[in-house]
Length: 93
Image (cartoon, rainbow, N blue to C red):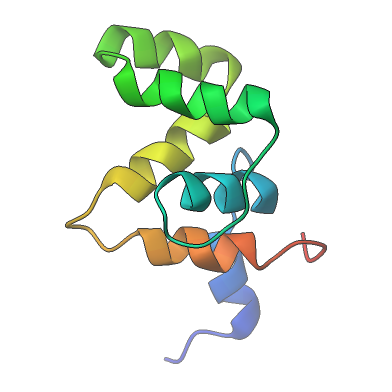
């Protein structure tokens, strides 16, 4: 059975990862996107250098940022294309 377009959007949407977050994370990884405000650029740096416990603590307040970062950092999973699609969904959620 061929999935309907609405099913594809439903599978793509993560309530914690907004199109803006996806775009800023992609920019951080030099994969397109746009730079975010200074606070969020520094937040991404903090996530990048954090160990597992520190990253879990950051995720309590910024779950979408940590999830998006981990998707983009998974270089072997090819999941960053999901972030690209999410970043293009501005206004469609």
